[in-house]
Image (tube, rainbow, N blue to C red; front, side):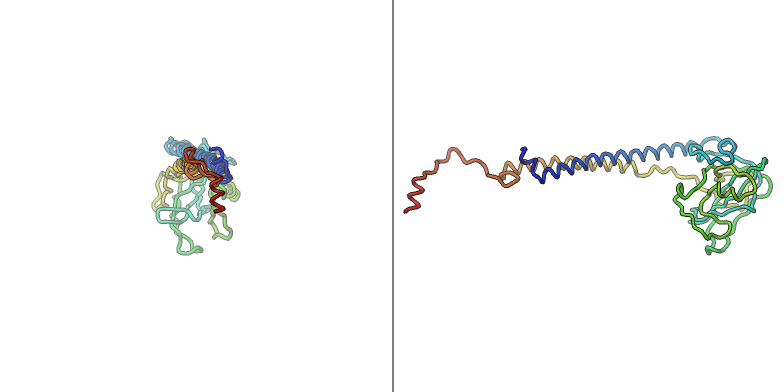
Length: 277
């Protein structure tokens, strides 16, 4: 048995199994960890969306971005829109495909503003033509919406391009936008879900996000199934090699089975006589 299992070919196979099995086990736990992270993020998202609205100043302030634990929290703010500094955010999805978000500062009573994503509008016919944007209402309004932290190329995966039409941006980088405004701006921005008084017409509200758990749990199970297959395959191969050795003279083509002790012994003298005759 030892000779069968220690041939160069079998030693190479043992080494492969010793590498593959721990790797597959680790990959399974890595995918499980990713699934747990996504599950925790989804639970936090659902809880924050369902929470009662609070004034925006309780969760953010000027010069400080929104904490990740407060993302999706429902907040309220009262003030007047500043349409002169309105921006359009390119390449955003809506019910009719790719379009733009309408980002309008809302200036509160103390002079501090919060950026409000009023919703989605369709793409204009050409990249250089001006889209039709429903105007922001005049006078004081109270908005309710989901709080979001500032966007960057890193946390969105969006590549910022130069040469955009005036008043259009790629990401909602609050600090950069605030540097060009004549008033202080709260960190983060608000995705509008309700407004009093309501606007008509108005941009399409940004849809509530769907909880995405991903396929990581399935991938984890698949890696562990591959682990079992590798181990079972190793056992089957070992058994086959041993069976072949017992029936066919060993894995290296060595001598066959011992001669039958009951068979008559050869007579050297008779062999010699036969050879001379």
